[in-house]
Amino acid sequence: PLSDDEDALKELIAGELGAVRDRSLGLTTDVLDEEELVSQVSPLMSPLVWDLAHVGNYEELWLLRAAAGREAMRPEIDGLYDAFEHPRAERPSLPLLPPAEARSYIGTVRAKVLDSLASVRFDTADPLTSGGFVYGMVVQHEHMHDETMLATHQLRKGAPALLDPVPGAPGGKAEKDHSSASETSEILIEAGPFQMGTSDDPWAYDNERPAHIVDLPAYYIDAEPVTNAAYMSFMEDGGYDDPRWWHPAGWEWRNTGGKRAPAFWSREGGQWLRRRFGRTEPVPPHEPVQHVCWYEADAYARWAGKRLPTEAEWEKAARWDPAAGRSRRYPWGDAYEEGRANLGQRALRPSEAGSHPSGASAYGVRRLLGDVWEWTSSDFTGYPGFRSFPYREYSEVFFGSEYKVLRGGSWATHPLAVRGSFRNWDYPVRRQIFCGFRCARSLGREAV
Ligand code: AVJ
Ligand code: FE
Image (cartoon, rainbow, N blue to C red; front, side, top):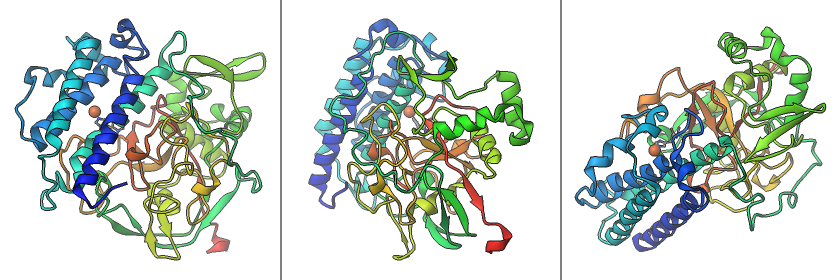
């Protein structure tokens, strides 16, 4: 979406800042009362009023102080909204700005940002402003928190607060291809090198950089994410009760937590129901399974005689164009196009198998972007030549074996906050995020 013309780029940035703020308010002060905004639905989540002021404080730090060189507006509140000073569990007990004050603070920050935008030079020699990078970072940050706020909405009790279906959303059934039995098919990715990561995407994060060549043996990858119907077969086959399928730490998780189904599922009258944004409905068989942790995904894959893909395998299937010998920004090409993926909170749910056939990758792998974040088998680490930028706390401090990488974004992820190279990460026990998975398989010896 980026332009070489600095004025056009600034206009795009101003528009995207406005759009993401509408989204944030639509998840907070527009739809919930003060009591709900300051309360905490789970120790895993912040009170929504924390997220709201935090995105504004982050914007003040990066766009007003760092980019525009302005004085701090409210240095005394910086600590309250520093995610590293206060873990989520303790945020409700902080002296946070109440909702009306938070909204007014972030509005003032925004007015000053728009006022300073014209005078900030996008200097190609300055990595912070070149290509509008730091503005892209702030827009993406607010969209990421909006997705986090949606996870908070999903966890909250009480009457529904969000309209479902989303007004103006395209009909989910319009573009669907059931012809290829895609729910269960696998696609062969031939052996060979591909380019992973990026060195020239202007709004890419440090952890997506630099581009580097990775050589992979041939493998199969599922054409679509694993569906609820397929996951129910695993459950009905006693998958949760058979230690053969589970990673030792996953078996421990299963034994201590008592979990025997994806989060938000319940069993009633011989049928599985799920709670979704305050409404209870039968589990739809053709949607990707959602709200399973890495251990559940790993166990399912082993039960199916498969495994989770590495993140390199996921990215090659998503981005590599073997005919052109290059990696694409999106599975279908380099430009974002509406309708090729279920992204951007256009619906409050993933789409059904067979949807969005025009979003397939060069190899014909489908629904890699949008719908559900996909667990991979990989730990979150830096690529060869990684350099932290512009701050270590975005990704570098999370590198190591504690976090698993997720790819592709969910229905809740905004198109500006995901691309084929984008990397998300979380603990392997987490399932409140909009996560699912697809499987992969190495070739047997006969095929080598
Ligand atoms: C990239 C989604 C793992 O929410 O912890 C938000 C994004 N970083 N504020 C997170 C993030 C700083 C991050 N994830
Ligand atoms: Fe943040």
